[in-house]
Image: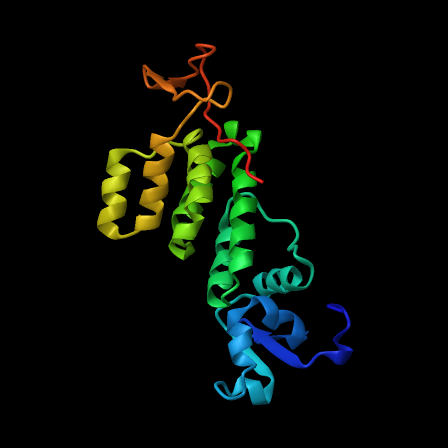
Length: 220
């Protein structure tokens, strides 16, 4: 259906160059509150013209959104977190709550990859993206946000100076701070469930007495 525009009844123009996407209202309006409103002819002119212009969303990003709306997938995502941020911004604009939740779960899985041990710069970029991602999250997302923050704290350090700077310039929002506090207060050993022991700046497992990177239990 996605690859067959013959019976499409709506065109979305994405990006500043207005790349056209021939879509089906019966599909995209089910999950997107934005498109549902656009198709309501009593409230929006788009309901009559059957055309929507989204200059704020890049065509490549919107292509992933469309793929998810039709097939609940959006393909490969790079590791540094920037594409996740763009996707969650699009999900926020288009009011697709289920896409936001899916993005957070995929981002969590990305943060659990062992390659971050040897690529600290990627872990720092993921943290930077996560700070911005939190701006588009809801209170109901806090559980997964805390899990993500726990993973990131295994590879990067958030210092008091960073927190002060982030609060001063406004980059650290209340949702990110809630995730940070939750992650720091709930760090437990995945083997025995006991809170990690601080020893010379290292978190150690009470059950094994060896250096350990705390990881939350898998969700789902």
